[in-house]
Length: 472
Image 1 (cartoon, rainbow, N blue to C red):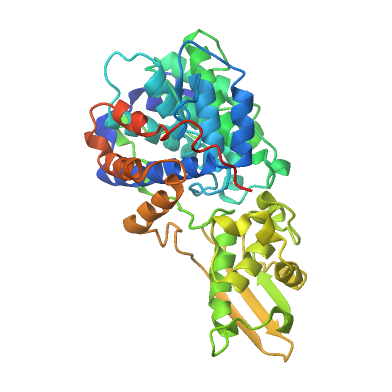
Image 2 (tube, one colour):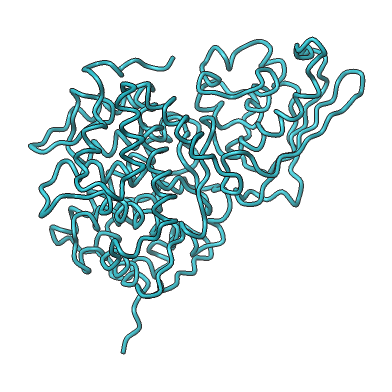
C-alpha cells in the first residue's frame, strides 16, 4: 500500500475533522482569539490604511455580498469583505500572535464571517461549524510552521501570515464550503502559489495587506478548486513547493484523525495590551520597571536631560530596530520608541503611536540616547526572548531591570475580564455599547449558537458613515 503524502494527509485532516473532535480547551482558547480579533478589526476601521483599501475594493461588485465590519451601508463581495476586514485586523499590529511566529486569527475569521453571510447553505451555519472551520484554519498554520526550525524564530525574510495564513484561510474556506478530499488538496496547492510577502514592507502601510491578501487568496483558492483547477498533488511535500518558503524544510505526514491532537491545546496565543510588534512588549515591561526608579518623591518623572544613556539588551531583530521612527507604523516596530514612550508616559496605548506623540521633543531627545546590545543567549524567539534594560543617569547611577514574560504572553495570559475590556475599548470605536455587549455574550456562548447570522448581524455598524473617521 502506498504511503500517504504530506499533502494528502493535510487534505484528509481538513476534510475529515468534525465538530466532535473539538475539545473544551480548544473551544475556550479559540473563542478568546475570535473576540480579540473582532475587537482589533473594529478598531482598525478607523485607520488610514483601512480607508484606502476600502476605497479600492469599492471598484468590485457582485450579486452576493458580505458585511464590512462596523460599516452598515458598505458591503463587498465575500473575497473583498474578507480582504478589508483582515487588513483592519492587522492595521495597528494589535492582533494575536502565536509560536512559531505568526498572527493566526486575522487571516481566518474574516473568511468565515464573509462566507457564512454571502453563500447559501444546505443548512444553517452554526457556532460549532464556525469554531471547527476556524480551528482547522489555525491548525494548518501551526502544523506547517513546525516543518522548519526557521519558523521558530522571529522572521527575517517574509511575513508568516502571508504564507501560512494563506493556506490557513484556504483550509478554513474549504471546510466551510464542504469541499471534497481532492478539492481540499487542490485548494492547498493553489494557495501556495498565492502566498508570500517580503519583510521589507514591515513598518509600512503595506504590511496589513499581507493579512488581507491571505484571507482573500485563501477564499479564491477554494473557489478555484471547486471549479476543478488543479495544482501539484505533492505541494506540501516538496522543497520546490511549500518548502520554497523555509530553509531546512522537513515535512511530515500528519497523524490520523483518530489520534489527532490540536496544536492550540498545546500552545496558547499571546494577546497584546498595546498595538505594536510583540517583541516590543518585553521592552515596555522592562521600561515600566526601570521607570519606578526615576520617579521623584513628588511623583514627577526625573527630567529627561538627566538621563545619560539607555541600553536595551534584546535579540537581533533588524526590522524592529528603528532608532528614529517617522511614522506610526515605524514606531510600532521600534524597540527604541516603545522604551522611550514607556519611560516618559508610564504606559503605552493606541494614541501613543499618533504622529504628535512620536515627534515630541522629549521623545526625540531620549531616542538619541538609546543603544542596543544583543546578548548571545537572547535568541529571536517569542518563546524564549527577554529584555534587559539599563538606564544610566548623569551622576553615574545605573538602574537595570529585566523582563522574561509580559502580561498577555501565553505564559502570563490576559484574564477573561481584561480581554473583554480590551474588546470593549476597541469595538466601541465602531459599535454601540449594546452591540459591544451583545457580541461579548454571543462569542462567549458561540458553541451554543444555532445560526451564525446572529453573529454577522452584530458585526454591522450603527449608522452610515459613523466609523469613517480616520486616526490622525
